Length: 223
Image (tube, rainbow, N blue to C red; front, side, top):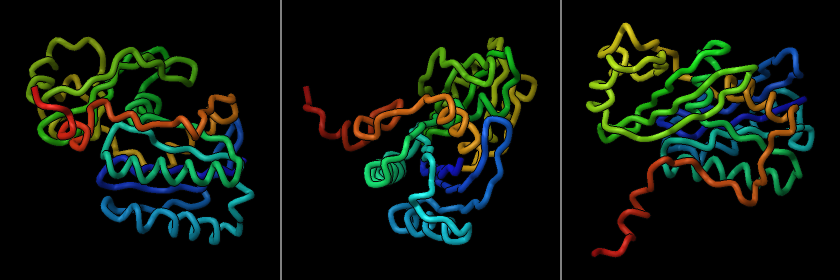
């Protein structure tokens, strides 16, 4: 199964072209994309990966995209791109939360973990998951002030997974500092979802921002 995986959720994004089945996954190509260039670079990057692998868009068997949380603009570019590709190519689509991906990549089977990502503005995205049987079941997700989360660390019972150095520096005994995930890790998770038929309708797909965008906040009527 040939799978295209896309992550435009953060300051640094990536695209991966993968081939695999239920037992294994081979990364055919991985390209990094800097945030702020997604609208200009995403489609050319996809075209380059396909060309290097000697494949056409029609040979893709499925597409995977990170649906959040993260940058409003970045997520919009990524989701709009996959919506268009899926509509034209009639390919199945799977979505992966970056918080979910942290739990699945670094959590242990049977373990409850807390995934944390930098949300900017002195805040963090937090997702509580139970990892079991190759799946991460979401218990709760939120956005909280960084200082408040750090104060809560001594009371937390579950292991914290985060690539955010400000978290690990404050709670070394509680926090496992991870490497930032790229699109190849997203492709590995997405492939399993595609094979299991865990797909979404591109027409109704929306981003998981956890918080509202500035544009939405500024458009709210004043009271």
